[in-house]
Amino acid sequence: MNRFFKSKSFKIFIVIIAALLLGSVIAGITHWKNNPLSSAISAVTYPLQKVSASVGNHIDSFCDSFRSSSTLQKENEELKQKIADYQYELADYENTKRTLKIYEEFLGVKEEHSDYIFENASVLSRDNVDAFGSFILDKGSVKGIEVNDPVIFGKNLVGIVTSVNPTNCTVKTLANPDVSVAVYEARSNEFGYVTGFEDGIDTTIYQLPGLSKDSNIASGGVIYTTGIGGIYPKDLIVGTVKEIRKSKSDISYYGIIESNVDFSELTEVFVITDFEGQGISQNIED
Amino acid sequence: MENSSIQAEKKIIRNRRIALAAVVLAVFFIWNTDGLFPKPWGIPAMLMVPLVISIGMFEREYAGMFFGLFAGVLMDTFSSQTVCFHSIMLTAAGYISGVLITRLMRNNLKTCLLLNIVFLFINNTLFYLINYNSSGEEGFAYLYSDVYVASVFYTMLFVPLMYWIVRTVYKKINL
Image 1 (cartoon, helix red, strand yellow):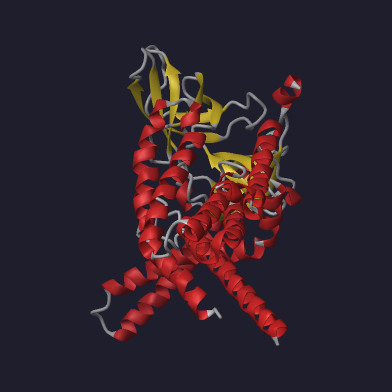
Image 2 (cartoon, chains in turn green, blue; image 1 turned 180 degrees about the vertical axis):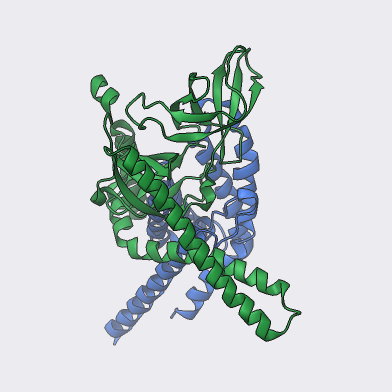
């Protein structure tokens, strides 16, 4: 046993583990979310990531086409081929229409808020180990993206950048309980904050906790960001109030907020890299 | 004469390790490509764990350790949670499985299944404790049973496949 602990391989193992632990501790202290090795690997694997994302994007349309064709197998081959062709064309049209809608909404946001600086990004992959739908974007610090930059889809807030490499960045969605957003409800003008459910598998549902019995927030109300805190700009849509429930732990109530966007379907988003008032409260704290 | 046989042996080992690195990359990208690898009810398979343990079992502790580090860094690069968690755990998995096969256990599928179930439980429990339970919120308890324990059993389905892939590479590119 003693010989094992003195072996060269054990010493190398201990050195590697110690270096990794040290890296974790430094990252934890400095709030720097990446180690240099990960950054280097992400740069090297960037082309493979792009291929991987491209394959992922094509799988859906391929499966749709296959499924539709299978229902028509009893029909003659020529008709089946024609339908498959039409489906590809339709899928292409739908994709184009969806992209156009994204850009139209983006243009609307851009016109309303000339102070926003955007970076368009595609979803490279999703974090398979995370239960709250975090995903990786194909743009990073090279394009000016920083930690805490908000991520939007149209006028809807999707999440926040939590770590950045030179060529990619990680986004935690609003469904993650680590993320919370100061919000107001448009009709009642009541303020609060929205965060994810710890026990909610559905990544498009969040909660608006701490409502009093006399709250005027009701089903159908639209929730917007307040801009307080300097992380999220004002008036981005967070979601719609689905229902109000009584809290099990105290006498307060909480709202069930449903996002207008299905995060699992996202392929393109915009990162707001700069806006008027960004980081103001952080600067005051500093 | 002896020198040339040593050279040939080194070349074979190098080729085998390049092939295994390609397998690690291929499995990682299949696992990580959105929609390519099934996630029933949102349960992920931790494919890199059985792969690294199998490599450690065949290539022993040195190579197991570095393949574990490589696979772990790949996973950390795409992770939103922790900085070095997967690197540390997979390096340990590769090293420990190599050491156990060298000193204590036999290299067969039963051993591989045993090592995997133990290590997957430790890995997933630590991941849950560090990322979710440390926040002190009670609501996260469902995640452990419904996602991370379920993930152990789901991953176990792929252990024979990973073991077979590594064994095939080892047998095809050997002395």
